[in-house]
Amino acid sequence: MEDDASMIASEGNNKEAMEVEVAPALISVHPVQDSVAVAVGCELRVFNLREGCSITLGAESGEACDHKESIRAIRYGAKGKVFVSAGDDKVVKIWATDSWRCLYSVPTEKKVSAVAISDNGQFVCYADKFGVVWVVELDELHENQKPVQKKGSPLLAHYCSIITSLEFSPDGKFIVTADRDFKIRVTMLPKKPIDGAHEIQSYCLGHTEFVSCLAFVYNQEFPQGYLVSGSGDSTVRLWDFTSGLLLHTFEVGSEVGHQQTNGTENNHFAITDLCATPDGSSIFVAVQGLPGILVLSCNLSAKTLSVLRVVSISGEDFIPTSLGSSLTSDFLWMVMGVSNLPGFDSSSLARVRVISGLNKCNSGSVEGDDTIKILEDKQVPCGEKVLEKLQGSLCIDKDVFSAAAEAVKASMRNLLIKKQYSSERREFRKRGRNDRKGKR
Image (cartoon, rainbow, N blue to C red; front, side, top):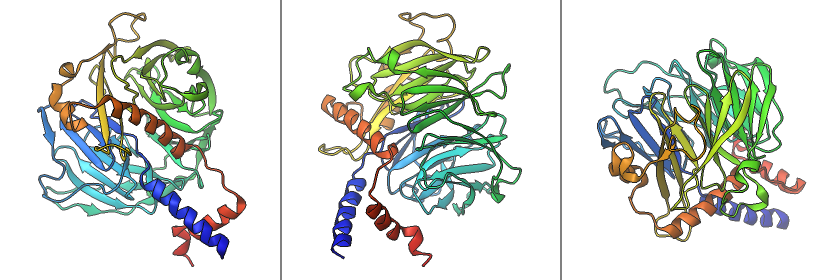
């Protein structure tokens, strides 16, 4: 009993620590750059780039649509008609981007770690921290209809491993999932996903640390494309995902190690996000501790990755936590930010930067030219108006920047590096699990 009491006290302390755990800021861009969204903590900030004005969520319906806890995943659909947000409050919200009404609210049993939308916009998938992927089918809604509460159906499972990334293949035939235990799974998407996906196409195995992000690279010559993955093992890997064959491995450390890396320990450069150009020729890579972006060239014919350049961001300690781009514009949007930042008056930080030249960076350019340009605040689309909305403020203190950078590194480790428990501690945690309590 005393042991259990001490463990309960320890668990209580851990829960308190989890409550103040920082959440990295996220960014997502509409497919034709009609709007851009930033999530920081429980706040979802959206700006209408087409009309040059900020958006108030749920303004037409007059209903409160905010998340109650940190948002961990946001995503526009391929056609831009719907937007999905989800996170620690165990609610998936599905929005109509023409009015920014909340169409559906989907309660979940566990906290959500990733979301994806099928290319036809018919299905929304979300992954929870217990390793299960759920699917929701979207129905046609009538104008002014109130939000509908939906229930997700289980699609597939990684069995007790946090799913870190979730993507539909370009042809819509597969759904690809990555997890904290180094695995990438490629699953055939059935005609009726609501009934579950039971046919595994392949596993892409080779990473030696958590897989943090996925992206597809494809073009007209290679419509099915290839899969790109980033990991905590400091590599970006190129895969033939239908067979699980590893085509090429790029070691990030060899390129960014000589750059200023904000005190990254042990030359460990975890990949935090990936963003590919629409033609699949270039990949922008956010690296833990790197104040800038690594740009890779992707040769789809030769099936290889190579470095183009490292784009350094001088003048501020900007280390991107999330990347986003549209299918039609020449801009890469980046955000650095965290929520629940301890020790400061403002507990949340978001800083947005934009790079131009996204679609020209692989056209024979060399390092040092001005093909890729980091825009000043007044040069970004819609200027300082969009930054004031997405950041919450135009001015951010330098000390807050430094603290945020350290908080982001700690957050990545806490979220994705698997914790080790003694056998006694594991048994105690099993007894206290919420999902088991309901089955007794």
